[in-house]
Image (cartoon, rainbow, N blue to C red; front, side, top):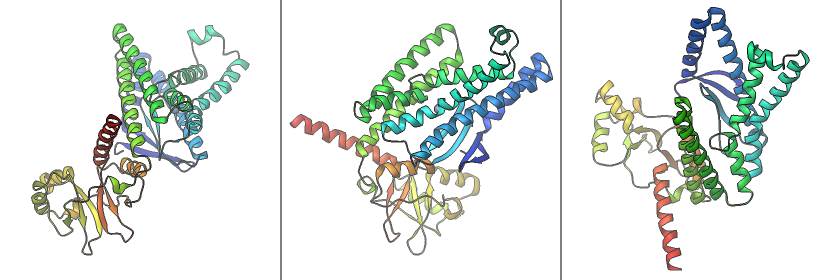
Length: 364
Ligand SMILES: [Zn+2]
């Protein structure tokens, strides 16, 4: 998230713009300006900004629908290829997922109807005018139509993929519905990739690869959730780990690091309370830049969310993802550090349970 800037706050949701977005805007201005003069460069930038206003409204559609089901949206980020609304969790009921997924394209449909009405009233829907010399409204009208059609392709992470999963989930288990939807998405991505390769469209090849990988990771996340459902953090947390004293230096931390395969080290204060987390990566970077005598408290990550042993694995996985670290401290009711929660251990738990499940079936 370091490469994005907050530009607004709408309905309690931070709206952010990714730095690469400006890069693209610069390219658009440069090429349009270079080819057709400065006023065209300005026009192109204006069109691009209005298109992204539509993308933002689309994402707000998702976010507000989710809010109606009590699911907060962390933020909306605009990337050069589109927007992403990061929700705190995914709606679990198929009907809710369907409504949240469809709410985005529905916003575009409303825009299409409004623009279409204006164009119709002014005679702007005339096809000749659109092809020979399109004006701003006509360009926006068609862009929104393309957005709806593209988003409804039934492949993750596009909205159509979620609609398909939600529809399948009304007839089968959620994890299975995801596998089927992901399989269909990957099949479509493969077909798109082959078509793009034959017609030499690089951008389309990249989109196909992106869709293929997104389907893979969506299926993996849901597979993980189907096994972890209802389990507490205590069933997967690490209970044997090394800690660092808050007076330690990086030099002392290195000694501990070399004696273990652990990658994250909780730093404890004088009362044995959790003060922060020192990661192997931060430790090595700081060692190079700041030297071995730097106190670990200067380098550790502070203000991390903490979880209780009885917190559900699903929620803890959400926290870890939002915090953007590889481990979270597990504190008991008295605030004592009793474990480290890492997604890696959830994966191990998953493998153990899968192995046990197979054995059980084999015996029976
Ligand atoms: Zn969408």
